[in-house]
Length: 321
Image (cartoon, rainbow, N blue to C red; front, side, top):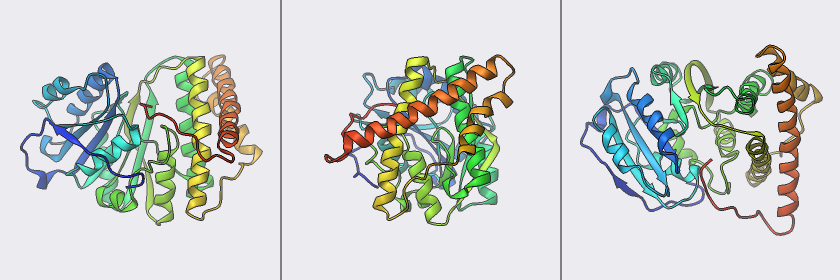
């Protein structure tokens, strides 16, 4: 896989029939024990038969690896823990995929709670399109405007690219599934992205370039609980902008055209999108945050461009998203 393989330490391995496992759910985690516990509880409550899926938790160098927690959940589902030195969530996801027994990989994050029918919905979609990647809805479970605005931006991008530019369509790693063999054949997540931003878009672009399908399932729902304030909201979208620069560089390495500036109508629709989802005055607040996100995103892109000019991409210490 791009960026090289990692030595893995695997624990909490339990005996079960790997021949019947349809899904391997990969959950990277980093210093989020409370959130991870809620995520695992949601996975244990899936309406799929217990022997049809396994969960692989990849601890990315947490101060206290969640060994006891994983052991507790082994009573209710098939689960394993992999521990690695801190290398970032993309490397953690690749490690989980390397250890997978399932025919399909399903990715979610440690601050997410998949709905009880999540795997069933993915299963239905993949049975219909077994050589496609399937993404679903990611809904903020928090009421604060910064978390809501950030999630609405993803919703808008899903709808916009599906209708206007299928080649740019992508799914975020909080809620996506695909055939394991195709993921590995593609090389997994590109580890040259130095932080948690845009590696999911890069994977989907390479998926598209191979001619594989991308299918959206509105029934595959994941609840996302990522608290943001003004400062963290701006840092998030600044990082996304930096990630876009690395995405552009990755496209160039593959001989693909670089990122194109969307038309003005894209930005107007993006800013107005929250107004269709929330009444005033909340809708106006969310629209203002959408506009701010794009300003900060653009700043992050050009900041990374200036930092990397003449000296190569700047290194960033891996960490959780």
